[in-house]
Amino acid sequence: GRIAAKAVALVVRDGRVLVERCVDERAGTRFLRAIGGTIEFGEAAADAAAREWREELGLEIAGLTRLGVLENRFVYEGRPGHEIVFVFAAGLANAGDAGRNEWTATDTDGRPHTAVWVPVADVVSGAARVVPDGVAELLRGFG
View 1: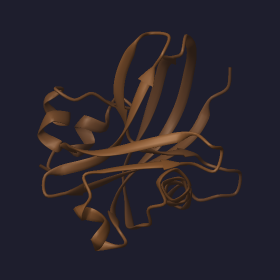
View 2 (view 1 turned 90 degrees about the horizontal axis):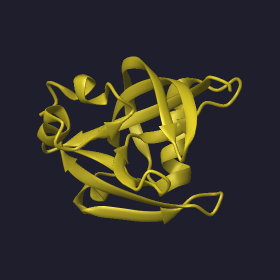
View 3 (view 1 turned 90 degrees about the vertical axis):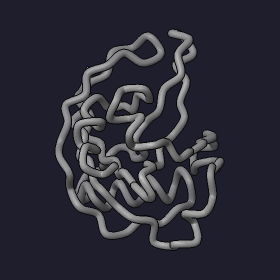
């Protein structure tokens, strides 16, 4: 296996964070994921996070500030993964976007993505599990 370099952004507004709904079909589990993806060669991590938000959900984010870097080792769909994840705080570039409760979009690869607002308190308490592990710690103080 290879270690992947990823970048994600957390948009927090009114005590809620915008995250993606995901399913691990093989494990039969549902979870939430910080929105972002793979950093391409030569691309700055913050630029990668913004590009992924655009590609996955059609949303523009702005004002990215690095919150931390996480090492994420996991199993998804029965396969082990290992990532180094740059985590940013950001805002929605278009304030009008904040009024929606949910986004469903199809990315450039034809995969569907659904993003929802989740209370930061639920993430911090562990009631809502957001991957990568460590996001809850980085969200403390954003309640």
